[in-house]
Structures are given as C-alpha cells and as structure tokens.
Image (cartoon, helix red, strand yellow):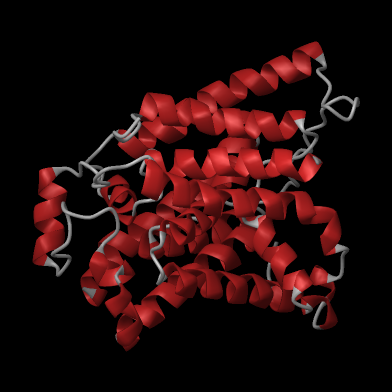
Length: 182
Length: 137
C-alpha cells in the first residue's frame, strides 16, 4: 500500500478507470476538461470552438476534481517516502545536466520546488510545456487517456498515428531540445 | 448523486496516476531515454486489458447504467491533425513531464509550480480554438 505500484497493477487499473466511465455512459478523456474550463471562463465569446453548453460536461469536471483529490490522498496518506526508483544511469545523467534532485524526490525540485516561481527560465519552460501539451491534445483530438488508452483499446488507426506523434515529440524534446536547454 | 460517482472514479484515477509514478517527471524522462520498462509496461498492460474490455462490451452489447447500449464513437479519419497534434503534445509531455490527467493529480499532491503548467494548458487549448480553422486537419 505504501510502496509504489508496479506496472502490471497500474496499467490494468487505468483500463478499469476507462471501463468505469464507459459503464457510467461516458468516455475517458482528460484533456477535454481544459476545453470545458475555457468555455466556462467565457471563451465561447471569442470563437465557436467553445460555444457549447459546458454544463453538459460537468461530469468530467468531477472526474478532474477527483484526480486532484486522488493526488492529495496518494501523497499524504498512501506514501511514506515517494521517490521513484529511477535507473541509476538516468540519475547520473540528470545530475550532470543540473537536475541534482534526481533519485531523491518524486518531482525534480529544480522544476517543481517553490523556487521555480523565482526563475524566469523555469516559469517559461513550465508554461510552454503546458501550452504544447494541450494545444497538441486539442489539435490531435485527445491525449494519453483519449488516444493511447481509449483509442488504442478500440483499435483506432488515428489514435495509433497520434501516439506515434506523442513519442516522436517526446524523443525530439529529450534528445534534441534538452541539450540546448539544460 | 451521480456526480459523486464521477468524483470517486476521478479520485481512484488520481491515486493510480500518483502511485504508479506515471505522474513523475522522472518516469517520463526515463521512458524517453529507453532506460526502463516501467512506463511502457503501464501503457501496454492498460491497452491490452482495455482492448479486452472493449471487445467484451461490443461482443455482448453491454449496457451502461443509463440503460442504453455502450457506444464508443470512432475517431474521425485523418493523418495531419493526429501526426502534427500528437508531436506537439509529445514535445510538451516530455518538457513538463505531465499529461492532462497527472497535471491535476500533481496539483492535489502540492507541487505548486504545476499551476504554471495548467495555466499554459488553458492558454494552449484556447489558442487552438482561435486558430483551428487555419490549421491543416
């Protein structure tokens, strides 16, 4: 319970989340929530993409709120010392490019410690990262939950193209862009 | 009442995201340098179990709690939007180390700079809506 869950437990539990939503008459898709929040914030006045009744998507906002609550519970009640057991070579590599917290924290304190707010570079990197994730998710019509899990479970070719894109983008970021950034 | 069900499903999902370490930036980095099977195992086993569930739903024509048959809408055909959109997503995923689910889980866990990622995510979604009609799909 207090240890990290192995992949063969975690993966099926993610599939179970998708199944629970299907049996509740809905679909598993987290990035749609950002569109719903934009609509609730009045984005419908700026373009048609957000002109829909966001209240009809309220169920998914409850899923989103649950994801926040789940993070709180897992961090505070279900962990003693949350440090992922990262491969030693990866830890060594990250240490050399400036991530000294590798191997001792759940999230790199260089990016997710409160000092992040005082570094213009870090602020820009985090905003840019979030921007790309959700611009890309809407462009592709789904994220890891909608395409990688739901779409591939339903053997959808578009989802396979999207997931190949996810990996192409990730590899470019880590192997081409990171050496320029860190 | 029904909203409680969705809150519980979301809470379960959030716990799974955090405990599986799929919400850890380090795990995403490790995945993209191919130094661990962990993330691949999570994604692959989720798809295998998920595909079995979807097969069963279609074969048995199972119903949801509303009483109607479960319908899974197929994705629209296309290549450009999935390839380009997916690649942009991947660039951000590797940089921020979080996809849209874990973003919220990390907020709950108290990693406050994730607020910047979520702010960027809202801006990205909004920007897509504004430029959608100018992009190849």
